[in-house]
Length: 127
Image (cartoon, rainbow, N blue to C red):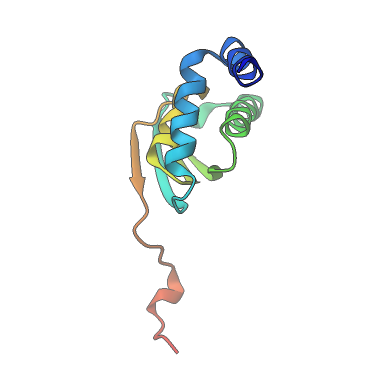
């Protein structure tokens, strides 16, 4: 009995009991879910004035949290425009994106699932 309990207790002490419980529930819910693409709108005053070092620090923080959350969430890229960041993520659930936002300290003011992707070639008839 103790062999099963000790690792859970150690994880709870290291990461916080709530985080361990939440991660276990999320992992169970998302294990079979497909990956979806999302656009995340982050309102960050002065975002377009951030220095290269500030952007690097933000990316480093985001990557660290993504590593903690595991392979069910992936950052594709972000666009810095005015006072906002528009981030493209692949994730098994919107909940994982919310969890990333909470842990990284970056807001996720709007999370929108991508319904379709189009580009100039979309105008061409299908073969």
